[in-house]
Image (tube, rainbow over all chains, first blue to last red; front, side, top):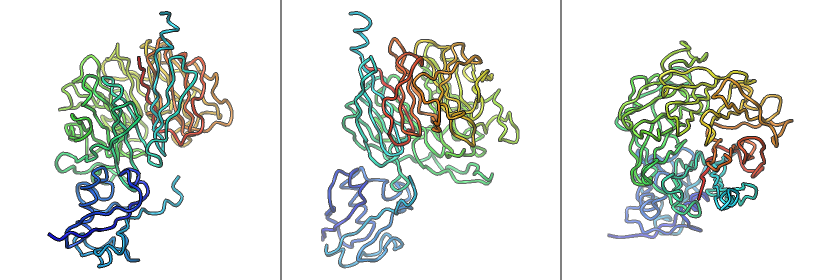
Length: 104
Length: 379
């Protein structure tokens, strides 16, 4: 089985929850998809289960988006291949929280 | 050892949940000098933090946010370190619908944990009251959660509706003399009791009157804000309803109003003195549209007669220009000889009275809005 090292950038609150600094570097089997990456995140950091995807439906949480290579991948299917630059480790898969705006 | 030496050797740990993190406040039994630890889980909403009466170092915290959902944190060292445990709250079966604000059916959806109630006898067992209203139990220290679905499947479930804060199960009271008996309260469905450990439930709202529902005396639909009891008299319950302070002497089978001479009987919190089962505390709030004290004066009211006759307690509390609220889970008592009473405000103050309410001092003044206050009395 071929494994690629995928870079993942978490929002600050999730980095704190996971006890990490900077990007994650995760070994993910090809084909590299959103589902495969998020499964790898949750397998390595079980405290993040349910914080990015609903634990039952696996739907992306409403206030989170997935970006990479200056594109919004939030609405791509979970099994769609991620961009080559992410698969090759040249670009990070970004998990981004919505801006809080006026919420206190 | 003299009594004063005994108090000095005891200590209290106040567990505070706020809109932006948790704080742990500790003092010796004199309750004059405090150490403040926190924020824990900075930036997250901490709806509730509560310790196990069996193992006081076992503490549960409900950590949530609109971005990242629910995290359940557990400490096994009195709040010094924490571990994320299970956060999968899956309703039993197909959850169906309850009423939405406009009266239309709305699917049951998990949003957050409002309240943890650790078992009185087993450190591994803890109950969670959640939004949308349901009761869950963990028998392994919070790792796995199972719904006690007899409550939600009470025939009235499809008619429950949310209050302004959501449809939350916010109060869980375990009868210390019979732990198969529990009382819970839901905004805005009412109070319920189980006598068989959570298998079946009975609505206990007879005597409540609520103007916001079509039938003011209906079996369900009442916005109960909080229920409290004294461990020595588990048949006697005190309730702060949306409006009205109520009392039951038959484990909730019927209620009578004991608002008496309160200047307003709207409020959220209610608690009972640790050693005087007829001494009750409330914080009257102006109204359901103006969530602050009357005339800008923060007043705790105490009844020493189990209701009806109330006296204001103001020494040390701001008596002008104070427009904070005190939420339903934000009052607690310790069990030291001179009972300590505590409450937190949406303005970020946590007040302590080390003398049963006679005088108050702020432990902290500038926390984020306080959502919950619990107290542990430690040997």
